Length: 375
Image 1 (tube, one colour):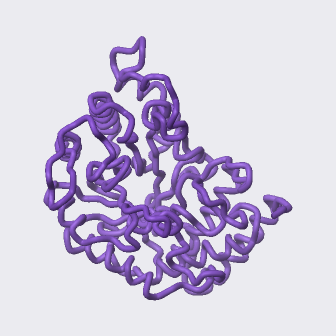
Image 2 (image 1 turned 90 degrees about the vertical axis):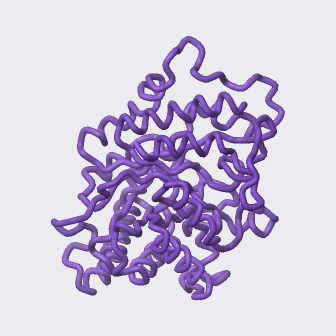
């Protein structure tokens, strides 16, 4: 399918047109939070949970993706001492096939359940579209682009308006929104920091029109690796999400090339004796402008692929990453709870597992996470 790129001025005009009906619903400044806006007073520490992460993968038999969110995961997180879960969602679960403007009530009720489980167990729930109408950093490719086509942009803002109205009244202590996963310069979609910022503001306008005080997070640019300065300064009830997979050749060893014959990248890297300092100098440095302007920052994703990274290397990297986050006062959410980057039912073969309610639990990794969630 060939697309004619939408000029940025036309994108601004479209977003203004989208925001206008929201303003008429009673929000004086739909893209801005109230002057007395809320901001998290505790560090969020927890996991990503993939129950509705990718409809394609679920249909192809991925056992991490259930099409819902089991209550027992919330109970376990509570028992372990965590207070946060991020729910990366595939919008295709929530709309009728062939019409992304028509929400499916029975699917939305499954998300309602997760929100209620969070409230029941004291786990803050953050709702995120990992696949949005017109954008996903993973396959399959969307038919149109959120950043240059009108239809997905209208559908995207409509979905956020639906969720904002649905959950209006639930306190920010219990629920927040994360707009779209990992905006990045993927050629087909034509995203840039500027047109992503325009799209993000339109979505925030839709949310704030229905629920003016809702806390909203935007993922960083280039797969969450650097701030979107076009969105700065953020208002008090908004923030930016960092995704830390650094160095990528370690965290994703053999993910994209299973036949890579090179040994796993060591940790700390060759020539470095302090992994925390390496992460600060080679990863966190990019976030200095956002740190300096007082933006709320949070590590919405981080982790290593469990099938190939040696366990001792993983634990050393994990602790240094947690120390680096702690040094900046950042909360975090491991990608993920169940599966290839998680602590339950991983493909790892080089460590002892504990039988935990019929699941294989990496207890050493869990205890490390618990240690740094309580500091």
